[in-house]
Length: 270
Image (cartoon, rainbow, N blue to C red):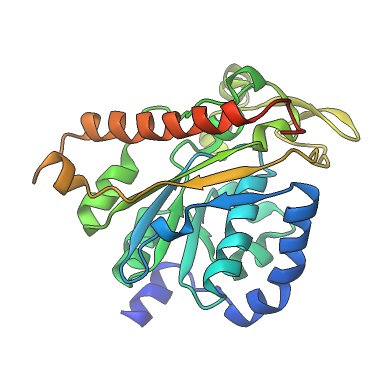
């Protein structure tokens, strides 16, 4: 299985030694700059594979994902077998080799299945670029765009779904539009598998498109809540209805996001 895994995910690059060396410094950035807080790590099963399903925010500067990974390794240790699927577009970013060492792998079905078969914990973001580039007035909304592949994956590999709900990332810049029409005009859906061409406003260059020119994320307080695992067959029967499961999972995540939002008094400050 180990050789099959390495073949499927283009040579597993996760490096526990590198994580152990660098994670303390990264953790300080998250806790001081973003005042990070992660709750509910005990809801992640320790002895079996699990599909962690998160909402994410902040364009390509996905600070909630960064914070979750650093806090998770601080809690469980660098040898904890954790991976996260990332969009192919991230391969063009300078920090790509680093996130690979922290467990990032290309978002391909064969990668996800292979990792879960080894008992790993795998984090996926069904909303993809559609969610992370949503406009600021939809900041506190779960936006998976009807994508149900994560449910099919959990059923096929017979693993529980663990919802991971985050807030604050969408306040690291001012996101004005997804730019879906622009993406179609420029053919990004065919060229880069991108269905958005977002326009945002951030520091220090002002307006940017798809986070170019790059910006410095604002120091928004980021809070993450891990919810109890969901056994789909236990809850919905031997052949779960995908629509029913999707509605239940997203509604539970929305409920948790609403609770986190109710704790925030001001944008960015938290």
